[in-house]
Length: 49
Ligand SMILES: [Zn+2]
Image (cartoon, rainbow, N blue to C red; front, side, top):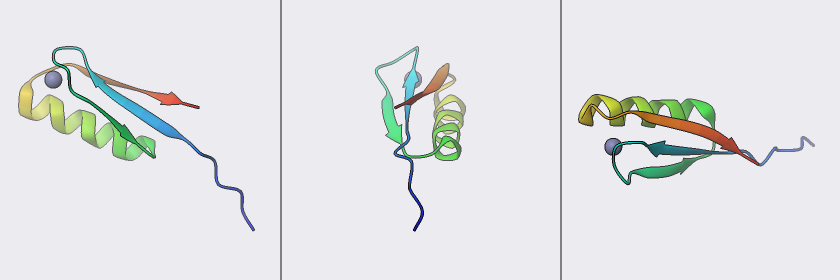
């Protein structure tokens, strides 16, 4: 059996109240990129433990 790390990535936008949680960095980055592309805002994401 493999232990699963319970990682969560918090995506936030600096230019609007947009924020979301994603379970992996790939999804977080994709969401951030998508928001930046569609809104021209600046987003960032960070790992939450
Ligand atoms: Zn935004």
